[in-house]
Length: 327
Image (cartoon, rainbow, N blue to C red; front, side, top):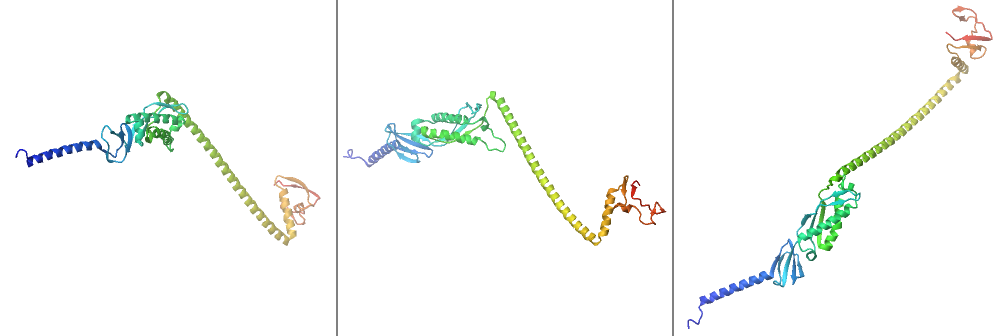
């Protein structure tokens, strides 16, 4: 009777073992059906190899156990890579070596998985796209577009934007990748083209210097012409004002003379005759004149008591007289 009835301790042991077995079974089932998606990744759920779900939000999720459903994790973090070194041609047929970098991230996990699957393969395909975009953009610009003059904005930013725009569309459509940025790290020249480039740069600088000198000479001539024009205008204004002032002065003088001479016409006539005589007779001049004609009649003495050469004698008055003005 005692052997057929299980003891309480035996029952507890059996219950403990059963609980452990259930816990292990539950843990195995949970590990097979539950999984965690990190914030740094996308998760694709494949059912018998066919994608059925895309999980991008981080958290705990459930799935059917293997081999029914399988998890494929795709890194969603920003990736960085460099293209391989290679030569390319500019529009003016100059060989240049332009190394570049690019940054990207997965935008469409399903398209990325079906077309690329691995990051290494994605780098290879993006390298080809960026290299093709670089060759296409540089082929539309001359070599001088890669050079930056003093106090001038770098032209490389525009070229990098064109390269990114050209490669980003193909990367998104073909690979499910968002191309964040592309950049030129440096510009190198093949050894054979270095001297030719230097000669071209010197010629370009000489041409610019000649142009600046010509512009300076033209500006100088323009400024000189403007200065001469202004000086001529100022001189003409000054002469005009001087003539106006001279005319006003002469008019005032004439008015004063007229007023003065009007008071004694005979005295005015006498002064005018003396002025005429002074203008005609000068030293070292010999003239023959008629002293009976004004104003030469003042050259002879009309009074009997006139004194000539310091002696008192009457002055003869012949009709014609000779006058020697030599002192």
